[in-house]
Image 1 (cartoon, rainbow, N blue to C red):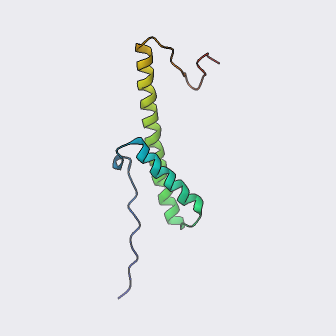
Image 2: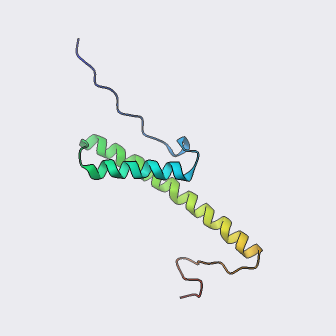
Image 3: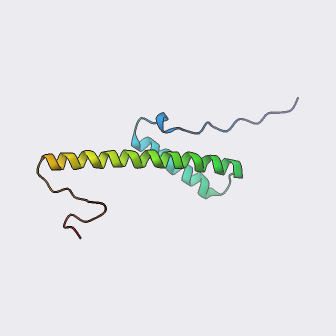
Length: 91
């Protein structure tokens, strides 16, 4: 009877994480694995795909946080500290 190899771990989905920090940690782990250069082509593609999904999740979370901060600053009469990458003084 042939030996079966263990199945690779199931790729994480953004919904698998409760926090931005967990998703970012997983993304950092994937980057380390890819940079290690010890993965097969199939594993590399799986990791890359998962990493792209996690990157998108993290980007959305950061955008939502920025929007919340913008609203809070506007409501309090404060200057919004960024406008599409500009410094607070407009430069």
